[in-house]
Image (cartoon, rainbow, N blue to C red; front, side, top):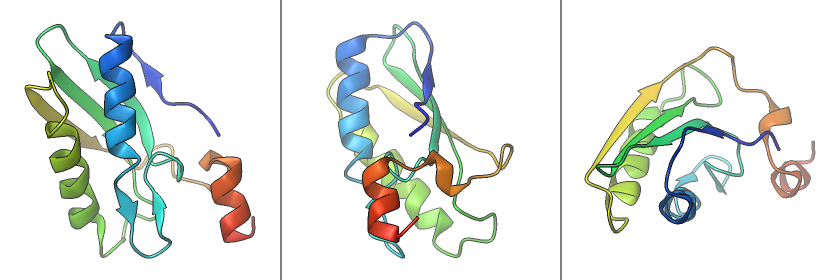
Length: 109
């Protein structure tokens, strides 16, 4: 799995954010957004503002708004997070190579 990049952030808070992302599932494939490889970047500033750059498996995903809101709500529940700002991108496009080995195995890739 390609790891999401990160700026100079608090490693403990970053770990908590990743754990929150692992609770957010794409309901069509029942895999969390982290292991599915939808998270491209996580930036956390000193004020607890978390910036997440993410994508969807397809630009026309009908569940996209629900997944994005789930990410926002889950990460906002993390202790010391003051705000969550999500940037949705489609460049580069998501590919199955972004998934963790476990996710690829579950989906037969």
